[in-house]
Amino acid sequence: MKVVVTGAAGFIGSHLVDGLLADGHEVLGIDSFVDFYPRATKEENLQSARDHRRFRLLEGTVQRLPLAGALDGAGQVFHLAAQAGVRSSWGRDFELYTEHNVLGTQRLLEAAVEAGVPRLVYASSSSVYGDSPVLPLREDSPCRPLSPYGVTKLAAEHLASLYERNHGLPVVSLRYFTVYGPRQRPDMAFHRFLAAARDGAEVHLYGDGKQTRDFTYVDDAVAATRRAADSGRPGCVYNVGGGQRLALEEVLRTIEQVTGRKLQIRREEPQKGDMRDTFADTAAARRDLGFRSTATLPEGLGRQWEWIRSRR
Image 1: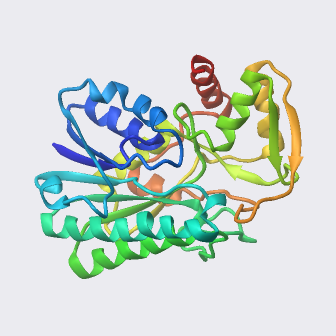
Image 2: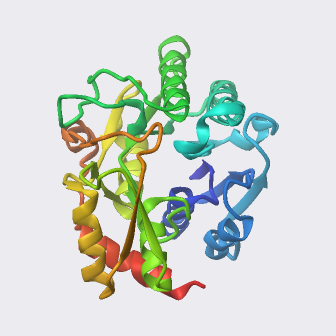
């Protein structure tokens, strides 16, 4: 089957591409290589795929590329391309987020309708929820994003729902909860913590360390993403989480155990847009997608630590 993956050179996207190729699919990857982090890192993510005869890369933004031919004959489309980052979405850079996350999604949805795409999966984020007094977070929990980034991801979810209802496009949205593992973006917390452990540098901890997160290993996120294309109910949204709520202070202790190194922690003020607590109710994903979290945090961190140590 021909499969299209936007954001193919990114953290989750590159893992998804590798899995699809391993299972015999023909994969068209789309990526614009935006400079949110170095292009060399993304090229490294695609190193294995580029050597594969069934992989082709189309470089450019989703909102600018001629997508009609690209999507023609595709059995599944996975839309992971986005401008990432909660803290950098304030101020003048918000234009980048509306351009990539909202307009880009709308253009892809239009192209998918025209091409008669049978399945589209949109990668959303737990950032759409904001802070909630009630945990775990269910798909029908109120969505009150705390950051402009979260606003754009929620807007794209609404667009996906509109195209499902009005055009019959079978689209499914997934709300990822703090995905980690090898190839994680360098701005994300686990990458920064593990790199600091490797280099003997300070760890910058924003807030009191008691804020909690639901962490999802990348292989589990990819498995849920692929199952969403196979068995997700069109028009539905699914939480994808690791199933365990942990405080950042506890995570730092786990990192010390995994790496065998004492972290030098420097506490900083909380950042605008950071959620206090996240915890996913994944009952819907278990029911419809057969989703199960398979990696414990120490196991997943161990794999990411080996990857971090192998890089300069």
